[in-house]
Amino acid sequence: MKALSTFFYQFSNWKTLVLLLVLYIAFPAYFLKNAEIRMNTLSGKTLGPIDLTIGFTPSRTLQMVEEYGEAARAFYATIEMTTDVVYPIVYSCLFAVILSLLYYRKSYAPFAYVNLFPFVSLVFDYLENITIITMLKSYPEQSMTVASFCEIFKMLKWFSFVVTVLLIIYGFLKSLKMPKDLKA
Image 1: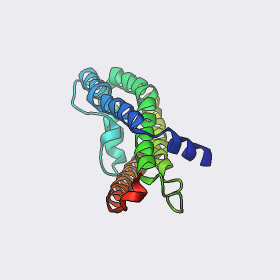
Image 2: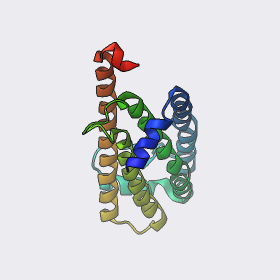
Image 3: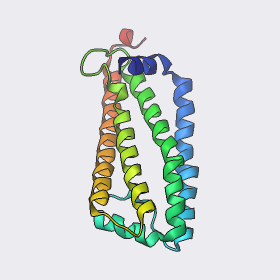
């Protein structure tokens, strides 16, 4: 864990930040947007991905799996196993770089490993993806247990994402208050 945190502290600079920001923007603006359009076209309905639904609604998740239809389920499973494997890596690295830049001189507890916190979202995102793939691939069999775990992982993913954003805001505000001789 220390090695990964140190890597991000050393690897983080403005060029890396800009590169990751461009990659990050490309996913929702192009890859994920086009995937959602294709899913909706294949299903003949405007359903969108389970990943973006809000709240704890396992029954709604199972209903969505059913409503996708065979072609959209197959396509969605492929997206979950390709694009949605890469995207969490991109956003986790982006947020790790931002946190590394903001907390670089704060190696004391609890901030020593704060730059690794975005990877908590990655873990929950992957667990969510596994449950979504399981539901898509096992249809017409439906499991309320798998759907419930999917919803739990989804909520934990979003909660950890919000915590990451709050850490970024806190770090930014603290950096504004830091004396100029410590910013250099």
